Image (tube, rainbow, N blue to C red; front, side, top):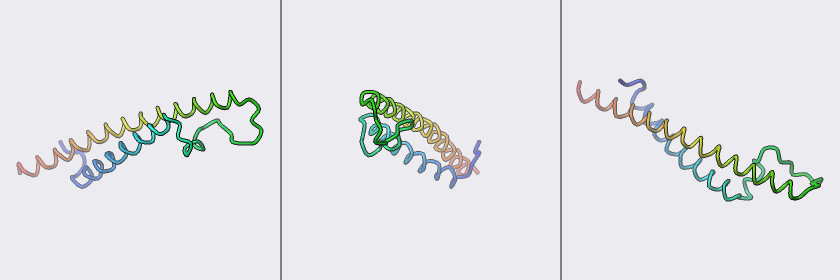
Amino acid sequence: MPICGPKCSLCGIIISAWGIIQLTLMGVFYYIGAVALAEDIPGVEFSGDIKDLNQFYAKMDSGFQQNALNCWIAALLYLITLAFSAHQFWANNRSSLSV
């Protein structure tokens, strides 16, 4: 039973595929600790008053790991959206062939 039309489901497939690729790569880069993404770590301030360097490194590592996990969870949600959109695309094509 189609819920959305063929154009909407095709758009969902394309956006979901791109979201999976992008978020998976971002998760990998967060996991390896890419310095270019350091400004996106929550709870870490980049000011000149860093008193304990070990605590700063621990916060950075924890933040990188948390962001990597968040990206991978979002990629899995996009995978669910991709499966739904592909099912809708299949259902729309099947219903148009039987009529």
